[in-house]
Length: 117
Image (cartoon, rainbow, N blue to C red; front, side, top):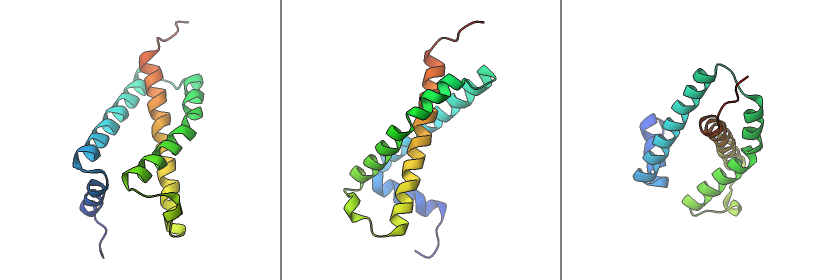
């Protein structure tokens, strides 16, 4: 694998997660992203209370993302081979943390009524 192309990355992710699950995750991520931008445009500002609650959920998202990848790859933390594996898992944890924060903030904004005043 001399060249790392977008198609190669897609093929690897489809192999790890399966085509159906991978594209379902991509679709869900797209829907949450569009909803997040909708909330930002609709509200014209960030609610710092919702933002704080979203940040408090970040450790849960990080742990869940790492656990999900370990389950999908039938692996364990004992199989980490070196610094690159640790960097990849830190990236997975960061992506899970940011993803759950966006999801929580968006869900709060869409489900809770805005206070008038």
